Length: 340
Image (cartoon, rainbow, N blue to C red; front, side, top):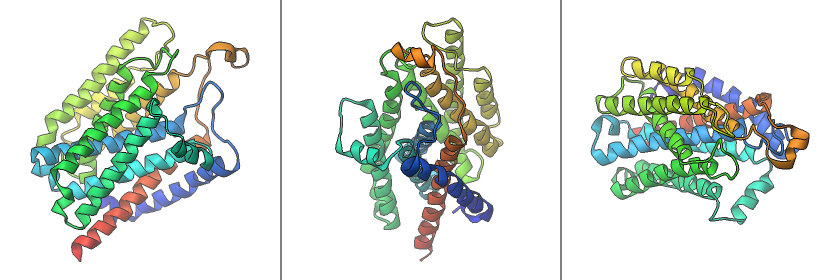
């Protein structure tokens, strides 16, 4: 389907990453806690790995659905690869989330104790629905059933994907007492990160120059996120109470670099933008927890610091490796069905 499934080096790296990260996932799930967390700092790199991969999946889903609904043949010609990528990224995200929950019992308890007033429950539910919808589309594509069951399923996938990205932001934006999280801008940030992920990953996955139909929207979205970060930086430098300045000027600067090379060098643009998005999401999630609230200050102090350990980096590698291996297997399966 593309060079990312034909190059054995990618497969070797992903297999090594699965073994490396899988060790820490098993350790966290079945042996002992190994992450840098405490009573005040509960969301760290493993959770951000889920956020990063889930938003990337959402972005690819949105670009794919938009192309289907608008009849964009440049992108539609590569729909199987995009569908497999969106599905694989979301599977990798759930793999990282499973390890972040710390115990298989926690996963079962989450399923058996739904809380419809919780944004976290809605986030998991919406992404689970998106996973099912993408799976149904893939099943339809394999069976050539209206090439993926048609427009109604595409509209449902688009609506659920956008809602999932917005609700993911609300998980942080509705946290009481955390000024660093509070507000609608959390959902705007996650939606923009998803959209930028999509417009950067699609050309990378297609191993081609940016499609002319995507060029303008891609530049606008990357520029919009860069502008939001600049405004956020200016606002936070003013010293908003209870907020730490989590935005560095190099973040929008790198996004502008990705924007400038977006048309001519889409692979390099994605390689600049995607790690930048990961750091943006990590910085946002961590900063909201660094100020300790209430009596916990007695033993944790007023401020905390954070640096991921090897186990947390292992979960990042694990989630990405699972995503690639799923992409590899599904692409090969799809190719085999098409050839036969």
